[in-house]
Length: 304
Ligand SMILES: O=P(O)(O)O[C@H]1O[C@H](CO)[C@@H](O)[C@H]1O
Image 1 (cartoon, rainbow, N blue to C red):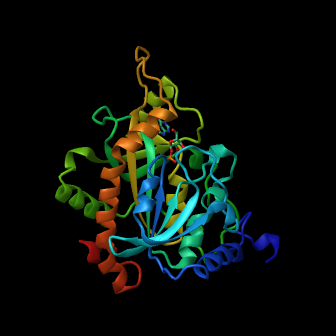
Image 2: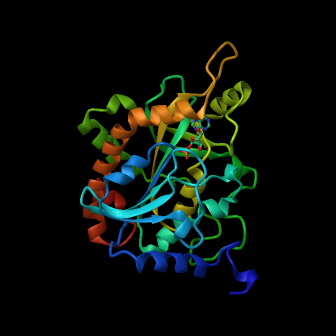
Image 3: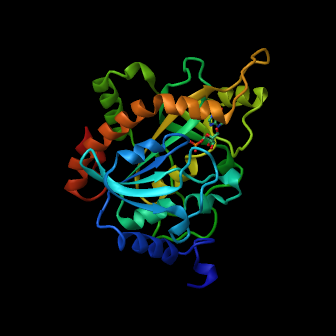
């Protein structure tokens, strides 16, 4: 394909090549993909009959560099549903473009994935939240995207999605409802909120003034990932559920002696890993009936 026809750095054929590379090395045919955020990678170890690939061995995948992101892709069964699970992600602050960090999402699309479940760690901005809570992402504020760092910038390949996607329904309402119901069945409703996730590029945590600004903008939590993946996934027709673990409260007060740090983020992730894994596994268990029905666009009918 000529450079002018490429989506940007990658062509459709690059995504296809990686998808075929993976599918030719596993007999699993997943419809669900899961991305594990900081310290949440143990979810991947729950997969039965797993086939494991290191990112460094997968064509065009980037290696992870951040503690808490193992850098392995696993195929296997979770709650009886065939899944592919990213044990860790790469971030823009590691020196990559938005297109590079979202590469796996388009590969998933070409592998036949229908639902993408994103997880991440973030700082709480909503004063009703506390470290250890879980936020179902209802909507987002994509600060890098608003500043031009949007993964869809560049020539658009219509095979992957439309030029001007409307993002009002990025986070599938039926999936969120299903997740809330599962949380109630598991007796963890008091841990679970719905809210707005803001992304800033990182790697610095926010200043006090920035945290206050983001709260005033309407954000309930702030992180350094997830939104580019959600944008790319929605663009190419995947159903998206995003679960944010509030690993710390963003510092919004000059008198506070709290200092956000990655060790604290990983500590909270480890404390809540089992709860989050249980929630995600149970939600995945509800997806099968819809996927077996085949075809897109019927999520609400199938899950409700
Ligand atoms: O978003 P994930 O990858 O879960 O991790 C979050 O936690 C790290 C900062 O502590 C950053 O990588 C931020 O993005």
